[in-house]
Image (cartoon, rainbow, N blue to C red; front, side, top):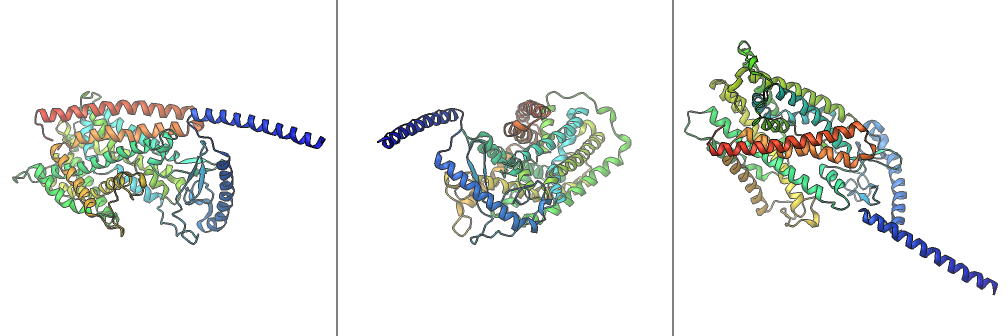
Length: 534
């Protein structure tokens, strides 16, 4: 009898304790829900614990098997069982909100063995890629920026190099999180992943959509600029022919139509060296001609006075010439030694700053107030034709790169089977079962090429387009978003001077972007109103 009474009392006490525990858990869950977090259930908690145990055993087992062959910790950040500063495919990492981020196990074969590592690039090769991006043919517009900015334009070339180098580093820092042991682990792979992490959990896909739109605008505008500069250069190379700049743009676009059939950039990469050689020849010819006229340099024309109306356009031109943040996450992920990324960014941007500043100053000193939007238009007709032909070939060979990147972003974000949209995409897959491009998918690519032609015909102003693009998307991708994402994701670990730098970059970048965009649009309206030409 006494045992039965004790058993009933124990049951009542247990039920009361469980009731109190359930109520307290409900209150805590409600608080977390109001704060935008989702508390895990008991089953989820057990699942996470099991995943942690399995993940720990798996990663340590893979560390025993893989790391000795790969050279241990020489690959940069000390990441357990990871390759090149990243994580093993299929690895799980749990964020502060309690959700699990699991990678698609693409690195595992059906038998459970790892695929052979893809070839990685050295820091020198990565630096070469960054150099090609920030020292491309768009430096031809920098002397025009000095025309309207004087010494302040030179200062902005230096300032933009410093800021873009810094924002590139903090953007890569946003790819990493510390695990339970305080070790940095690469939990994100792209600019879009960083943006989505900043907007989670309330709007988990909003940031990715914003970045995708900015990337598409940036890439498409780059394609348009290549068509515009091709038409401009051909028109100025052969002024005696009865062919207008718009007609030359059409000819250039016809040569670019095969880009619609591209499935990968393997064939295009063969011409990258030719592009670089052509760019070196162009710079050498322009600098050599300017040095031959050093006695006539107009130092008195370089002043601290700025053209208030046109200088904001120059800011966009300078910013656009430094844009490389779009592909930095992918580049860093493919480096053999990611720990050398910071050093690579330093020497590439220092060299770009020196070369751009010298090129812009020397060219402006040679032609002073007669400096044109594309500096090669100032050369004598004999030299101009040779240099412009090299430039046109470089522009045509460079066009497929941003075009293919824009197509890839569109396919991943809008079409099923594109790799990023999955089942959420609203449009059907543009590839067949065997991987062949469907007819309507090919039509969309051709339409994109034609769209770049139409824009080049109706807006044939190289400097204004370059300034508009730099102010609209260049400032966002290079200044505003990296600073904002760094503050959001790394807030708890930032020192006061990091916070100051990020806030200052965001504010200054926002002011320059708005001002440059407004003045670029005003410049385009004025060009149409008075029928002005480049």
